Length: 118
Image 1 (cartoon, helix red, strand yellow):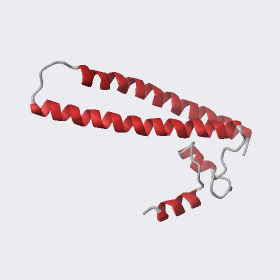
Image 2 (cartoon, one colour; image 1 turned 30 degrees about the vertical axis):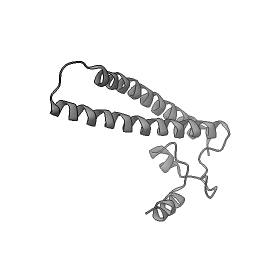
Image 3 (cartoon, rainbow, N blue to C red; image 1 turned 90 degrees about the vertical axis):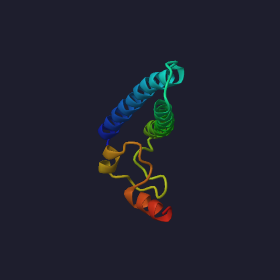
């Protein structure tokens, strides 16, 4: 895999990481305001806030998982293992990596994995 492509993907991964961190920071403010809001609320507001809290927590967990995948991809770039399928060892296509820069499986292995988990 060309060094130019790896550098491009590294920049893309770092930008994704920065976006997630900024989103988490802004959600944290929103989450804190939900928790500390002392204005009296009716039942509808309370239910709505519970749903908002649940969504914020779920989104944060997904973002944290994505951050781990991004960090792992950056480590693979550093170790010169980026772009290799962790299951079969074949190269992951550049198209797949452009779409999902932290992909760990080639499209064939990912498809097989999805079929097995249905």
